[in-house]
Image 1 (cartoon, helix red, strand yellow):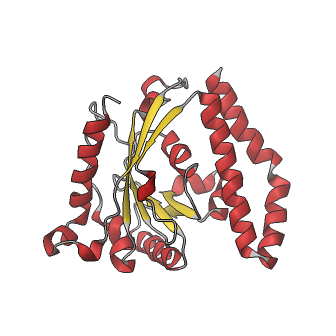
Image 2 (cartoon, helix red, strand yellow; image 1 turned 90 degrees about the vertical axis):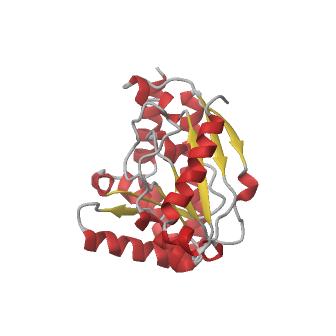
Length: 244
């Protein structure tokens, strides 16, 4: 029943808020800030509803590490489609996720994603991928945080503390802008859905925000291979949180 109700909540939200998209478009012409704030809070609200329906309990650690006065680059491990729901619901300000291009084909969902500054990445086209990164850099410069899954896909390793190799290109947003990198370690999220597809199960998830990492303050070698540097930090955190 959790699976049905969670899916129903998402579908009803997309359908019932169709007129809201028009209203927000009009508001955006007059007051873009109001439109952005309204979009953020509406999406966060439905995500919190879905988490409640799914019976997800979340233990949050280190949220005080997230700066409230500037845009950041969130780096997240990825085990579940619920990872976006879990983390976006807690973003303190405007935040766009870099998502796979296939999501851009889903009606209504694609509109809401664009509304909250999500970007669609074509992993097979280097030129288009570069354009996406350049847009993300512009977003950060204008005060919009960016969230990236540097593994490029959902991890399916038996040990959830193990990570797939990080794509170094995922960190260009921080290297080019100097914004802080916030590692976000998500533990046990695959137990919500992926471990027993197609059913949603009540789960205890641990979400830990790491201390900010400033690329320009790193030693030369660590900055050159910043993906590996951040990956090592996140693997240690995930290993620590396995038993929580």
